[in-house]
Amino acid sequence: MRIDVLTLFPGMFVGPLDESIIQRARKTGLLDLRIHNLRDFTHDRHKTVDDRPFGGGPGMLLKPEPIFEAVEHLADERTRVVLLSPAGRVFRQAIASELAICAHLLLVSGAYEGFDERVREQLADDELSIGDYVLTNGALPAMVVIDAVTRLIPGALGKDESVVDESFSRGLLEYPQYTRPAEFRGLQVPEVLLSGHHAEIAKWRAEQAQRRTRERRPDLPTGPVAGGAVT
Ligand code: 4GT
Image (cartoon, rainbow, N blue to C red; front, side, top):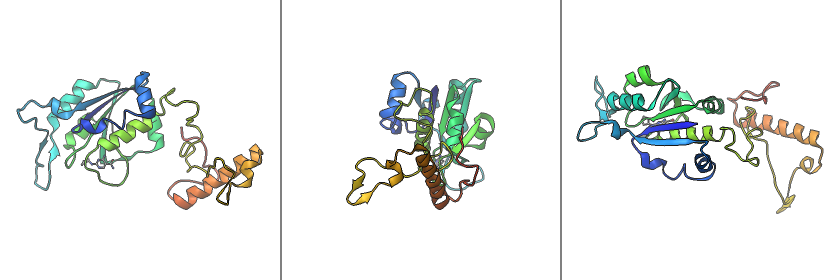
């Protein structure tokens, strides 16, 4: 999969995407990641990327010309162009799965007070927010999307890093887990997990995942049909 990123802060992408599973996916060619500075698509001496909003009001907007030029240079018919902004639909595991089957993503990070509306209307296939809070720019959200998507590319995870039994893969929070020792500072691991009864263990885990999801995330569906695959 190829992912291009358009940002005013390319330096922010150095480091977080050079470690661990993302680094391995890049080195093995599963992920072709290319970071682009929006200022490289300007033509004036000052490399201007922002301007004042028509109608007045505080702050500056990203002006449309550099973004149009960059997207027209980097995207083709197969590219999914995704804006990152607090006004997008909220990013979830199901959206990560959806993006992971794309051949080419172009992520456009917001900055200042955001985008000229014509960028949304003419260029964007999608607009995503990573949650209901405001950040200084869209670089961290773009990295969040890259991370969540990359680990879903077939072959990106090793066999000890399975995707099938983790939080949200079944739409629920993860059940409690324990490792050795079976007793630590007087704290016991639940007996059922030591029993070797696989059906009992699966039942306990399903109940725990349901309970935890109901308690901590009343916004997520539970009930009898929840806990199936999220795709
Ligand atoms: C939050 C998010 C995002 C920002 C989010 C325009 C002003 C966008 C600066 C930028 N804040 N971008 N994508 N929740 N801030 O995803």
